[in-house]
Length: 432
Image 1: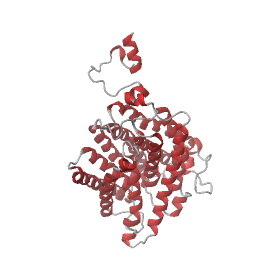
Image 2 (image 1 turned 90 degrees about the vertical axis):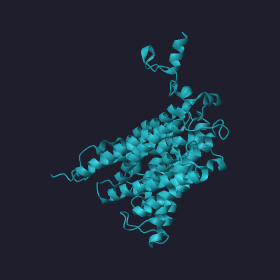
Image 3 (image 1 turned 135 degrees about the horizontal axis):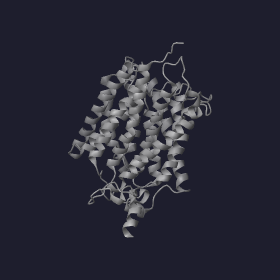
Image 4 (image 1 turned 180 degrees about the horizontal axis):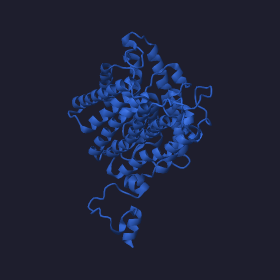
């Protein structure tokens, strides 16, 4: 029997999966550069730690909950249908795309979504508690929400909400969870009083560049084929991000008198976030408009934490929650049926119908994630504890949680007898 496998599409999806995987260390660098010197390793570890945990859960039951046959509720897929993926290993002659290629691609979405949350609670969260939260939130929130949004039986999918690559399932979802945890855990010691500037803006820019590169796999890869839709999405993602960078820098120049590298990096991410749900529904012109709007709105939104009093360390709320809302709702205005999604928004004669659908999907995910993340945070807070002590926070979470520091200033950095020895053990050996 001749196989129906399309090797070109398979290669594109697997390449896109690898590109999205690269986004995860990119996110770690982006976040790691924005924290203080004494917190950078913990930030890297939080992002990579969630990758380890969620990757295993995805194989065990995450994929089948997200993309298994709907149970009839529109809420979750069959928990047993594809558990551990054993039944998806055999070649399917009638399939154009191997099931495992799709499994691999979507695994990266699950892992990076959880990692995004970490930026909201930087500098003060127990690493062990973070790993437990990652497992619980992925299980109770991300896997079901992915089913709602992308599975054929999911209730948001059936409603007709457009979310091509994750405005609701990824960014609004993670942003709402970050807000809830920031409130539950509380403010960093010295917040609003002491300067908490990024310690390494070069690292931030490298992270932003890796995210931008990988995001083409994130968005264009979601076409699941090397076709026209992927090409349109690629261009829309590119120009929206350029416009967002300009929009953010204009706000900075007018408001603060300077256009900063941190603003450029943040504008890149804001544009990528906003175009993610809309990249298949807009024209290039519409994408530029959306990107510029996202850059301006997100640049202004990051200041909300100072007015409202929640300590969102690395602006997960201002960029991902707000940017995700802007992009998801903009579809209701800027969508054109000339784009692959084939839907007209309000500005193209489509009326308010699509906008209403987008709003329902966006706010349903927002409130579900906000509430569940808050409850999980409280559960951990009053059981094992989720926050390090004040003394440990002042001393530096890298040393107290991981017994390491990112930079050994003043030392030769040579290996010698101490090569590979943890800092706590090294100190003990030096005393002896």
